[in-house]
Image (cartoon, rainbow, N blue to C red; front, side, top):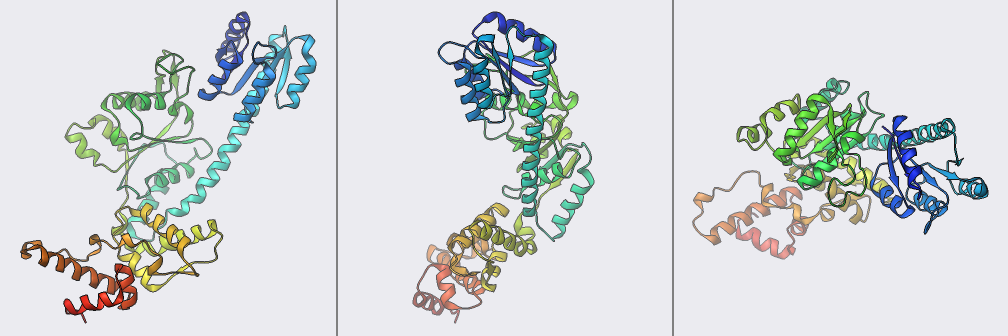
Length: 452
């Protein structure tokens, strides 16, 4: 349902126009001043502004300018009396869609509004298509020849064309939102909105309003009606990230919406029907959460129609050279550098690191390395020093066999030195830089640990 804001300091016009537009199937909002109108424009999702030309304090021309500064595409239709036609022409030159003379014929107003709304719909659709193409470009981030990633690709192909609800699980940084976008943009809904919400980023009250929208006056600060993400995603896909963080009270509402695909805005009574495909993601074990009554079991079963589990990078190390090369090429293009490659030692280091932050951490490390690299190759010196960590040790230290602190520290130091030598192909100068110590210091420690 398209939303139209009516602006007029004459209350009678607000009442008459609101009733007329509601009867034509539009959602009508009203403002009795330009200042009030600007507040609504800032908070509501509008499809058209219908404003009077002559108003006290701020007239329609100034309101038009303010609206166009915020959203150049939002159509504004001016209402004017016969004596101010020249002003209406001026408004057209400033970007008004059209104007209508008071007193107006309902049929004339209806046609002007219908054309304006249709034009804006096309503009928004074109904008979505551009964004969709940009998002498709980022699918290059979903790279992998490993069996786990090939299984994910196969699953996307099987389910993309369906309406099935999808639950994506995996550690932070594994690319859950990229997978959700891949499903959306390979589905029949590709030309409709892809709307993402993080359930962990908002309080319960704000999350409810964000998802379902609210009516004017529903709570303190609700100065205008606002459409929720479910409504904005109508016809497309809604992606709820960190679904495990959603409060139980909202889980009940979400379950009802999934079953009926209808809801009411916060503070509202009118039922809104939508057609939305839901994709959710979490780094939690939702099954275990449900068994412990920390998550509604009935909602878990409703979300888990199709389950895609993303493996951490450490369990698909064969994908790291492909990912690293892709990220290096991407960063080099963005920073206007030429082709970037990796020295064997640097690539060996990347493949051996455990990457607790997964793909996101790898991408950040490569981006930094590209920016710091002096030539066309990324070396060990270019990689962040904090990547050398105890988690990179191939086999765990047997702590029970270590009896005191000096012995424990020696064991850790020996293991890290061996690791640095392995990553640097036994080149002592590079191993020393990797460890952040002088070469002479390294040689002393090599003798100390009988590693020469």
